[in-house]
Image 1 (cartoon, rainbow, N blue to C red):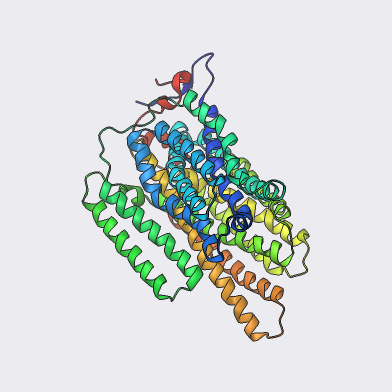
Image 2 (cartoon, rainbow, N blue to C red):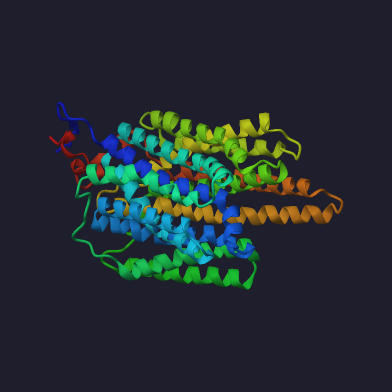
Length: 500
């Protein structure tokens, strides 16, 4: 029998309020990641962190967040998404408080690791709540457009706020700011999220799989960090990669033999979801590398301040919001998602190639301004459908782990992008300085960035190709997606909807 979702007379649809609360919580995670990146130099000086240790302020978060995402997603499926969501949010705020009060480097590193752990609970629970609350194609596209816009805005505001807070207050407010930001999402989640949001009482937690997956992903991310510091051919780097392969291989064997696997293979055998994961990973790889190059270009070559650098990124972020919330959200129920994805990746790739025209004396406008708008617009159009399709065809049993996989893809993409592209650009810069002994350092840096831009454009084109080959969903598939959800979504809506 068909399930028709209709509003009860006189009752508001609470799902949109829930969407805003969930998005606001996810915004805190993204906001904090961006703001801490800008505040890091001041924190390093205040806590007397060594140059070799400063990277661990970022890496400690990446390791625990990326490593625990699959476990966090499955816990959301098993224990209930409201519980896991609220625990993750409250824990993230407490960890932020500890980090802001840090009196020694180890306290800050520990706080960042705890932030990553609680963020790994929060992120998949948030995405699966949205996916299950909005199974219909048109409303789903609009919901993910709103979610993407708020999260993207958080990244932009984090870059800007990081510069302002560090310059006019102290780096500690990069942590403390999360306390007032979290009050409304926590109170709203307690008041409006239904008590039972998809709890699975029949499935057991795969402890061996959780240990192997966490260890394997942590070691894999750590391997890319080693590659950035010591080179791809170093013994420590190769040994770490070998250990990651062994751990993830063991994880695969365990998943094939256990009754209730942490990552059911059915999540990855769906070509649409697989295409969404791979393209999102390449998109995030490109975005991380691009932000790294542009940040150093603006601050090192052009001598921009941290606050001015944040302002320089605003056109890109605004364009990304328009691409996700206006273009993709309005067109997803009318055209095939892969059309949006390939179009977005092509626009982003072409815009990245414009950056090849930048030189040491280039002004912000027109080249960087036009390229920033094109990159933001293209990525916004492309990544929003990939995020929505990440839970394509899943129901309550797998929504959490499917949501976690898109986060894992993006996290691994970001780690790979930072390590690989930084190595490529650094090597190109060094080669330029050797061949041009009288060359200026700024010119050599720009040359290295240009080589990086070529790689980024190639990765974006690869993401577009994957979208064409694997993402064969049509607008009719998206609209009928609720038919494949194995349980109704009334529990997320309360009395605002009825089934007939």
